[in-house]
Amino acid sequence: MRWATMNSPSERVARLYAEHLNPGLARLMKFAGLEAIESHAEGVWVYDHDGNRYLDFLGGFGALNFGHRHPAIVAAVKTQLDKMPLSSRVLFNELQAELAAQLAALTPGDLRFCFFCHSGAEAVEACLKFARLATGRPKIVAMQNAYHGKTLGAPSALRGAKFTANPLSPSLIGSSMCLLAIPMPLRKSWTSRRLPLSWSPSKAKGASLSRPMIFCRRCEKFATKLGRC
Image 1 (cartoon, one colour):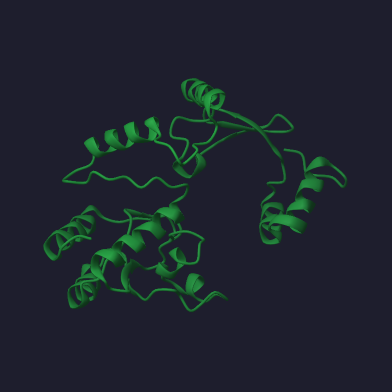
Image 2 (spheres, one colour; image 1 turned 45 degrees about the vertical axis):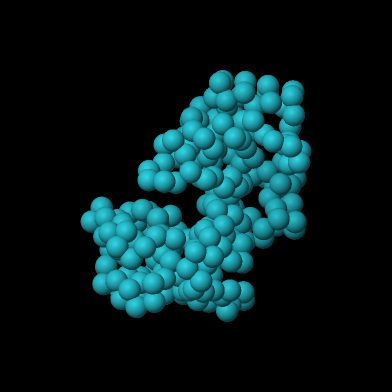
């Protein structure tokens, strides 16, 4: 990989990042030697403007499960763009209704309603609202050093000094901390006040740790016993 030189496209883009997007990210990318400009992608590979290719382990944070530019997905998107790029939101949407029905058929129990959104943070925000409406309680149980998004409400469920010690504190909601893979704090926090639980099987921002299956099963057991949201 060539290092960026003064007045090169990479140098210009890095400067624009620093001046108009994210100065911290610009410094981090330069420190890591990742100053190339992405050009295109195919399958599991991402290419920069110099022709170098990179094996993509990120996959759009899970959005690209079939890789970049899968032919069937590209064809479906092009077909929809030719028909209607964006839903009017004032008439019924057939594709959305069909997808919701298929998802309801796959989900367990009596889950049958879908809430479509654009990001993980928006999904967490919706869950916080659903939990408060269902329980009437302002606090939730969250995992230590968990990550839920960059909106104002979702980070309120974050635990850990690097997340809570920020200019946006105090949080919008109260939350009880639960250490990774230790069920007793969860039992104490949950059973004493019947609080909603926010958690995931892995911690992307907490050193990418995965929780043991026994921990997941105990969370499931507590939720079933005490009543779900």
